[in-house]
Amino acid sequence: MSKIIYDVYQNKNEHNAAYGKYFGRIVHTETLNTRKLAKHIAEHGSVYTQDVVDGVLTKAEACIIEMLLESKKVKLEGLGTFYLMAENNKGGAVSLDKFNPKTTLKGLHIRFLPDMSDECQLNSKDILAKATFMWAEDLKRESAAAKPTTPTNGGSSGGSGDEPGGDGGNGGTNQGGGTNSGSGDDDDERPGAGG
Image 1 (tube, rainbow, N blue to C red):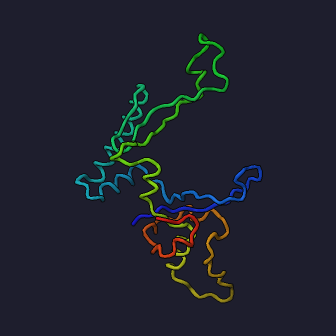
Image 2 (cartoon, rainbow, N blue to C red):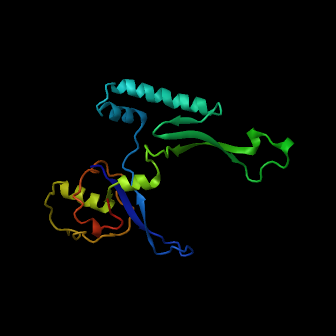
Image 3 (tube, rainbow, N blue to C red):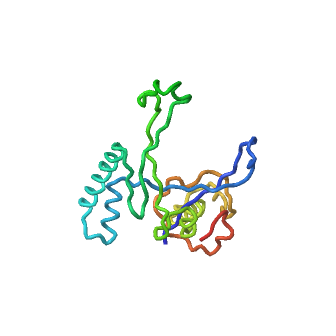
């Protein structure tokens, strides 16, 4: 089963009401480009080859941008809606006749609104309910345990690293793979683990 890798960090801003408290953040192991996504789709029992899927995705990207620039929203059923949002320069225009989109607007941002229909269940609480998690520190331990050890002269083992919380580093920000491992037998000992 796939798992979402998370890390735990402490708020160290003394001027914040949540100073000293601990929070979770998602650790992303990879960014899939269009080609990698097409390869994944093609390997998922698709009747289409990777090249066909890649071509469709590339064309869809260009067409979505084209439609947005024609002041249209683009809804992909079951996924969500892409649309443009205007960002204005601070202060705006002093009067209606002085408003010029090229100078008054600071930029146009592409926004995405997930499909919230009941059958899609892409709202944040439903996604959280479906998710299973793995602490980045556990992923590091599993990766270290899986590597063959070579005896060396001198040096220390550095301890067992069994204490949850670790050193508070961001941990595992580029740990490729391994998201399906972990038994989850002692989730209650990991900060924020569940699922």
